Length: 226
Image 1 (tube, helix red, strand yellow):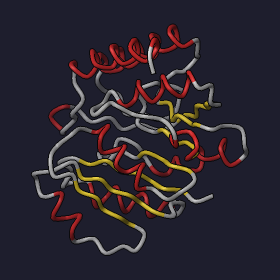
Image 2 (cartoon, helix red, strand yellow; image 1 turned 90 degrees about the vertical axis):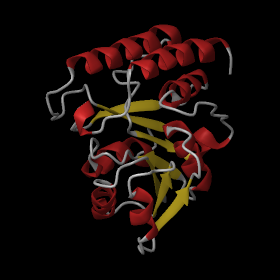
Image 3 (cartoon, rainbow, N blue to C red; image 1 turned 180 degrees about the vertical axis):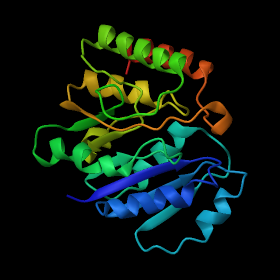
Image 4 (spheres, rainbow, N blue to C red; image 1 turned 135 degrees about the vertical axis):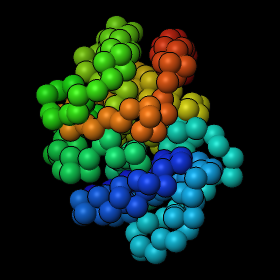
């Protein structure tokens, strides 16, 4: 199994080297594809200085959003399994073995790392968690599923899952669109517990209330249309 780790990044100059080190230390990625979404804080300069053989860096000349960066990374990835890794240190690459196990064992086509299945996590941001759980509940009602964390940033999947899937979302609504299309196509989805270290808005968190409304619209839109 060749694993491609796709890392969308925007203005993470203080974290990008550390997350790359953590991904490398997990010792599971055949390649790491970093997509810089037109950062303006020095991230691009850090990425231009990298020399690791298994790291490829792609640049957006104009900021398009996380979803667009993820799609760029997926298109460039060469592995037969793709893992999406945020650059902000909220998700821990030490969870990779648990995330990959259902795919390695032939039990799953897609694996979600759930922040709500009891693994260690930092205590923070009550209303953000409520929003996540409401969006997950809406997903389960609309698509007849039993997910616990639709909005998780840890999504791992076989290449065939995304091969013919048209992703239109440019921002954080990538998560509900991808989930809706995976559920409608009846791919086998597993969830595994992951540790989670959420940061607050004064620490650079980017997702906001507008993104919650866009997620609701995406869930409704892709329920009735592909």
